[in-house]
Image 1 (cartoon, each protein chain N blue to C red):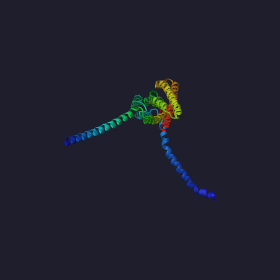
Image 2: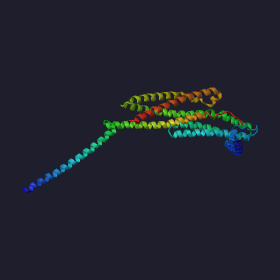
Image 3: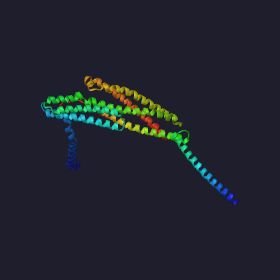
Length: 250
Length: 97
């Protein structure tokens, strides 16, 4: 009897499973079909195929650069980076965007697959947008925010000192501890900024092409310095917040 | 004789009225000047106890504002840190068609 019920229900279950399978197929098909486009292989003499491949490659890099440029503008408008810092980054982004446009113009006019392939190679080897430009400029933007914040915290120091000195309540000891911690964090952040700034000139496409390992080591050192500044600034900001809360509680 | 006495009385009355007006004017001027000087003292900030608490209140407000500003910058700091992490996820792998 149980077996009969199972068999009778089988077509319903089968229909349900088929429906689920179809839904998942339709949901994943576009992604599955899009994936090979980047890895597509063109015939040796198929110029159009090579050009399409190269154009997609260039668009991906242009989009990433535009996104970075938008971030720079947004932070400049908030005054979280200076105008000079924003201009320097915008200039670098524009130089690389122009480089991509030049290669695209050349690529689109190619009549031989071999020449088109060389243009694609140039996108990698001459511009290195993903390997050098974006990692470097994203770090530079991060450091610019760090420097602006460190300057602001340093400027606040004198005022905080006055407030702590003038405080006569029993919270003075706590305020003094927080303020000393704040000063130490800002000082440490500033020392790391000097280290980070010394690394940036080494992060070039030429250095990447000449010695990939040395470039990787420089990038690693820069990341370490920036991470330490980041942690220091978080610490100082937390101290400031606690000082503000203590003063508010009076 | 009556005429002389009446004239003297009127003179005294007018003089008294003038003295009253003068004293009221002087009193009003003195009050105004005292009010002005007390305002000046507050703005220059030197000795009153209420002034000291106002100064501490201002300090606190300034630090609250600075704190808010810094917290906003911390958000930008975290966002750019994420962008740094994401920038490493894309590669120039040299893939050719």
